[in-house]
Amino acid sequence: MDNANAIEEGQGKGPAAPAANNKPKKKLKKIANHTPMEILHGTLAILSVGTSLSGIILTIADSATRGITIFAGALTAVIGPYVYYQQTKLTDIIALKETYDAIGREVGRLAAENRRLHDTMGDLKQSI
Image 1: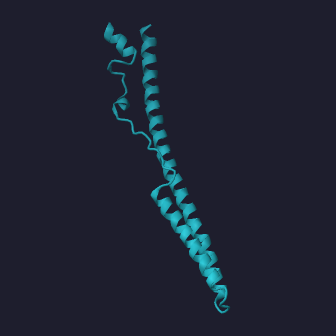
Image 2 (image 1 turned 120 degrees about the vertical axis):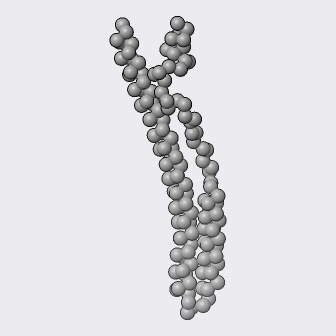
Image 3 (image 1 turned 90 degrees about the horizontal axis):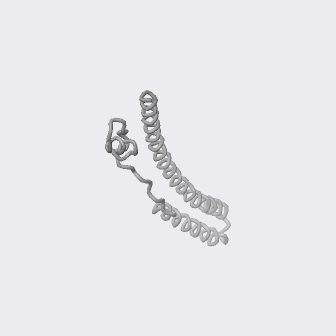
């Protein structure tokens, strides 16, 4: 009788125990505030803004190429930070995908547990 109580309390192994509990759980990793790729792109963004601004300042005296240089410098100053922004969004998407997968595994485990409990409840109703 002790074995039957252990099974009812979830401590024993019986035919109704779900197979999903035997799998090791994959835990979510902590996400760093800034990944190495974000740091690299942030540094490159700062460098591109600095070099484009210095290029604009140095070519203001030369009137022949001033327009082209200012346009190219402004474009570079905008593209660098935009690339950094895109890299941070890619990191967020990767983290969301990992979270989605973990939730999907948990939903599957809970659905199996729900089916097991439903079957156990049916067996208990029949035994009364």
